[in-house]
Length: 360
Image (cartoon, rainbow, N blue to C red):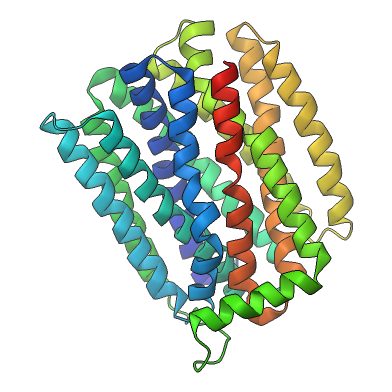
């Protein structure tokens, strides 16, 4: 990583991975503890993704219109404030399930903006040629942080309480903000200052209508979210009901999965520019499906850990390739909206979460 700004962005990605996966561990365990329902865990995780479906492209249009570094800093601040409010409400015993779900949706909104901005800022810093490697390194950084976040939050939940865990997440967001502020380069938009956000949205709608590759990628990514990523909603139940583990066990499963993702994206980052990205993407989807079948048949901790490594590896590679492919099929002035379209595809995930929670 020869770009100083990219190193700062990657540092923020490490911290972001810690806080994001930490939030997921707390949310899944807390909702399961409050409701004793896998369906409600699926609903909670699904609601967290709804903002991607609604706000993905609007966030992208804003990213194409205003300074992205400034927007990224504001988004991280919003995450910190929201987790702080959550910690305070839990500490004073004023939290109920519906308030938790509402705050969860708000957190999902800020994460939608952050992921959209991080994609486009990566391109701003390193350019088109190294885009896939840059995305892979960023995702590797997130997975690295996710290992620490999952284990750390699981340990805090086991030793203390959810309020303390959310307090630790808030500190993580504050440190992430400091890393973002280190970025020096202007991550500005390339659209004309005279073009409004609404105009950006209208122009992107025209691009989708004449660019079938973009539409197909959105549909494929949405399908992956519904049929693949939704299995994350089952991990709390697998830990507690199948393996008879506590919150620290859930943290272990999440962190081992993150290690699998780290290995996969490390290989991807070291591979350099991939010429047949579409073919690699399709092979990854086949491996993803087979690993999910393996996880479904696993009844011991070692089998679950082995399966989740492969599952998360496929998740990580499909994430990087789908993002890179979407960025490569649109004009340079619409990259923010392309990142937003990826968020929209991710927003289809709640349908899968609800389905798998109901079936469980």
